[in-house]
Image (cartoon, rainbow, N blue to C red; front, side, top):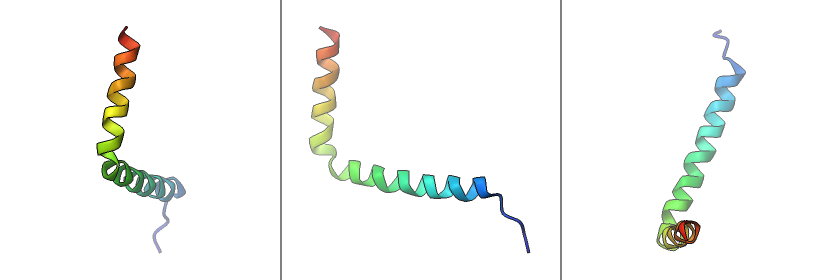
Amino acid sequence: MIAINPNIINYLKLRDALIKSFDKLRMNGNILIPFVVSLSNHERK
């Protein structure tokens, strides 16, 4: 049996969670992007 490093398992779980959350962000991108752009415009003034 090959010993698997627990850190690798945690990394894969984390990566999977990140990918899922980015997929949700991409679906909401049409709403999210203008909001982020307006926030960054306020910062410059």
